[in-house]
Length: 163
Image (tube, rainbow, N blue to C red; front, side):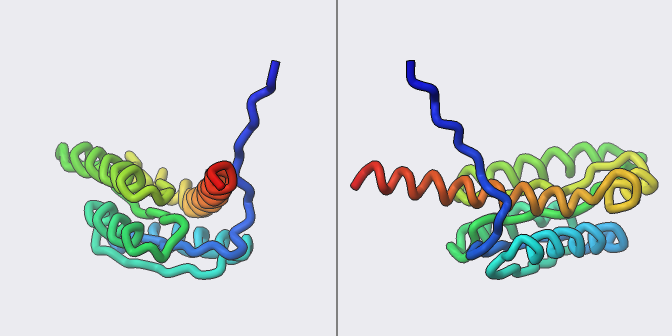
């Protein structure tokens, strides 16, 4: 019996290019996510990091799709914050942002990391942006690096197998 090969991306960003799309809405939180994500990418040796600012979370998927479609990036990190309010707006925006980011990744073939916080309270958002619960921007950057490495590895193996 042959043991299947286990494929896993590495955590090195050397030679990789990243777009970080972040929403300015709730900027006191999203700037913390951005700082942590870019710090992680820099520490892991990213060749380039381009920051793309959008007004709100709803605009993240379109900007991520444009970045992915440019052919310039190995992965896209998406960062934002959607806070629950007193209307159904939270549910609509959260659903559409998640769907749009996933759709962009599938259509473009470029890995997208989801670092959009969906929080019930401002206190929860503060915690997830670096105090008690770690920083989700950092975690999204790590996911982007691992997926970019995995995709590169899979493309190389596919190319080698078909030569």
